[in-house]
Length: 162
Image 1 (cartoon, rainbow, N blue to C red):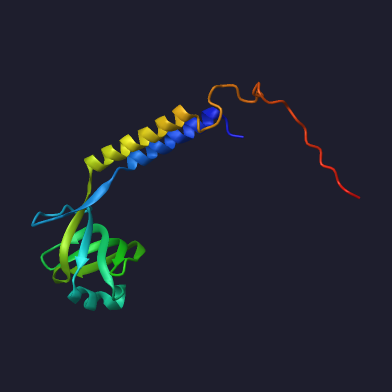
Image 2 (cartoon, helix red, strand yellow):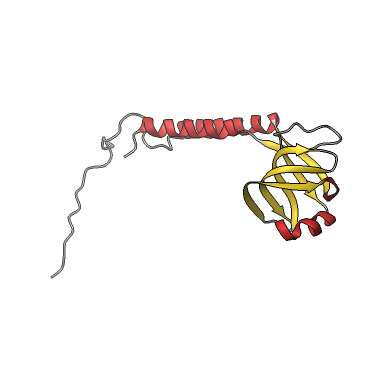
């Protein structure tokens, strides 16, 4: 059985982990140089789908990953995920992929969102406060193991028919 203190500790740790992850958004990059190592998303155009179809699949919508190298002709990414045109996703394990700049319609960078993180933090604190105020964890009043005064103890004995 989990004690009340363990339950409280688990909820607080879970809420802290959720809030510490924060929220990220993809922001389009317009002519700004991208720092190497940043998390980016490349929106692939029709020419890119046709060229990359043999190695990555014909229905690529976006390629997401860590930027390893960039010059005027191509991007080199450690791919973490591919989004497909019909809504599916494929998870990759950091495979190195070269994408020509002519295959890319939009470049977006993954950035920390202070506003969304603040909203998520407030919501997480509200949930934790609601749990404590309603006693959802069980009997938070400290009378664990005691029988309430309005009910008596009963023993159920199974009877078997012969």
